[in-house]
Image 1 (cartoon, helix red, strand yellow):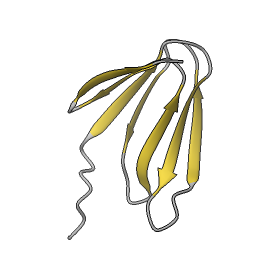
Image 2 (cartoon, one colour; image 1 turned 135 degrees about the horizontal axis):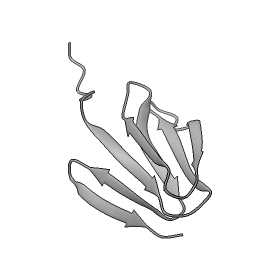
Image 3 (cartoon, helix red, strand yellow; image 1 turned 90 degrees about the vertical axis):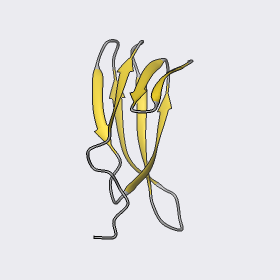
Length: 75
């Protein structure tokens, strides 16, 4: 209880080119990288925020879909 993280809210990242980096950033007073994945063209990653992950950085050309809408990143 008291946890404001919605564990049912997923987001989708689809790589539009090879080598798209998806990097998870930690929660807390010091923001740090804690996980990374590399996606190749047309690979899809389904993810969610957790107690440890407060932000996700996407580097490369990809489409990101959330319950708030869709956005495309540029390489």
